[in-house]
Length: 264
Image (cartoon, rainbow, N blue to C red; front, side, top):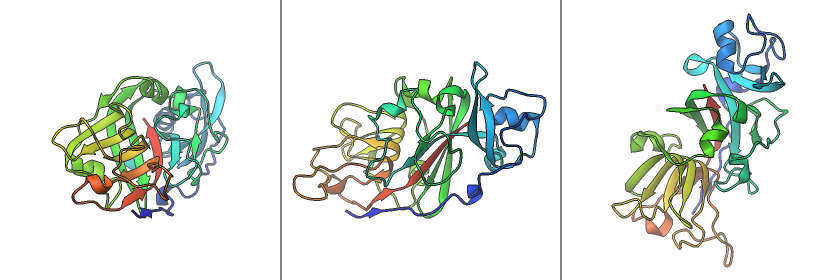
């Protein structure tokens, strides 16, 4: 099956600069989130700013101050097409305090995990998937940090099937199950996804063979998706969609995307 690789950059965040970067913003001299910055100083631009940990240590963070009312803190960037992506479902970066490329607070197409992943509390998650054009979805879910959420159990997110699929235009998954959520995993070796929807051909969720979302994994040896060559197992993308291969009566191409995860 053909993997359709995204090359586009988020149009609203092509330049991650700000005249207020690394300075004291408004009356809040030690802001904990981009939302706090925007509340204290409205009409800020998208760009890199300085946030602070619970103990007051400064660190760089990228803030989307314009889309969906602004105040979004970037916590993660995932390259679904990278052969060595660090964000497959089982990678320890999802549940550890380790960071990756955290000195680059921007929206370039380079995988990164920022200090904000462990520091910023939220009541919403915003996922932006880029294949040819950016598509965003906002999830109503609360956490002390994204790390704390990822260390926990499955959290169901009630979104229509088509809304999940719209994250990757042209995505095809199996017809049934359609279970969306956080830490979306049943048992080995089935497919799983950190933020997204699982689907199954049978009229249950017992054996999902397809998904759409961020943090994909599993499915090795399930027989539905042939590997790239004999003896090489199929590895799902860390961001994108899997159609279910020969286990889907109406299969389509698999897709890879570049994903941005924000919290507010």
